[in-house]
Image (cartoon, rainbow, N blue to C red; front, side, top):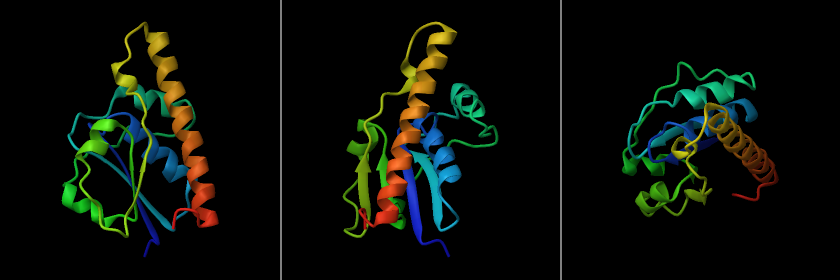
Length: 144
């Protein structure tokens, strides 16, 4: 059985949470169960697929998922990635740790294809750095 269940939650489960789930799965070992979901289902954004493929992670088979808010208490750690998800997150049981990473939605960025790709890359790299920090903190027991 997995010792830690981590959920990355955003509104549409199309970009930020998909990127976070994929990077976390490639960062954490099998003692961790990693999942992502949204308060709504917007489908996986093709730019999220492309930006992860650039670093050797394939999420082309991933599906956008919604979660019943009552199921949030099945996780040890819930990480909200946008203000909307944070606002919709109910009061969690006291044994569920909640962290909020307020990340701008790369899908809302307007510009050329190159500018959009660059924005997704920056978001991916920011998420990657936050997950590395998270792993260090979990290993040190700082989030227990």
